[in-house]
Image (cartoon, rainbow, N blue to C red; front, side, top):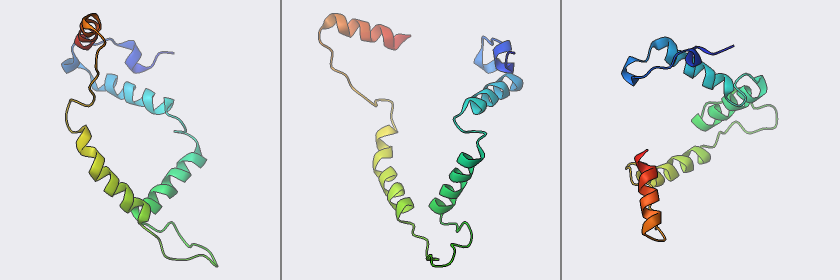
Length: 111
């Protein structure tokens, strides 16, 4: 059975229908690792609750009620340092071995 996005082959990206785009998104979600696994989804929700500082419930007897934000703070600090590297189009530079390799590189970049 073909998905909705496999049935059409739009030529112009400006003319892509909502059904086509919905089909692509639905297909990618269904192909996603663990999208329908309750255990994985539960772990993701718990992890996000901890990361955002929301207490996921009673910690239980003998456990601390204090929720540390160290991981979130360090993640945000690290992201603030590395994200400027990705804010422009020149992400990487390569040195070519000779003129023929340079021509091949430029041909591949044009595609």
